Image (cartoon, rainbow, N blue to C red; front, side, top):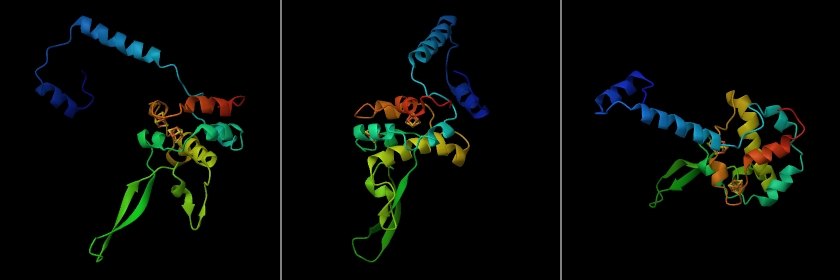
Length: 176
Ligand code: SF4
Ligand code: SF4
């Protein structure tokens, strides 16, 4: 273990731990290297904004929409997704109500309802919104990609949609 901060060092100093042996250190290094070598998926570039935003009418969006169930699993497990909805919850006595913020997903049909119409009425537009926000317009909003590369959206997609495959297909031929 290594402390990254002074507070962490305080915590570590309170633990009754023996120093790691050279074999343990070597085993830890090898485990890290094996884990890194097993991770073969990758996005085709660190900065995908222009590559993706130039492909908004790519036929691959129809292809992925035909497979996507709009279940929202990918957004539920993603550590950077933050979409929410507003709800008014009336008290049972009818005297008051509470305004609440609740988790939501951009894959839900209701999430696209604005002022009497739906800005994302089909799965194609919802998947495109999710992927282009995460990997493209997040750069405009926060100065970096919205994907930390954890792979949870791949692991939890019930139909096996893999964002690295979708991005590769969408940006093939362009230079991200
Ligand atoms: S791989 Fe990227 S998009 Fe998928 S869950 Fe992790 S951070 Fe979110
Ligand atoms: S988890 Fe898969 S099927 Fe569900 S909304 Fe995400 S991409 Fe679509």
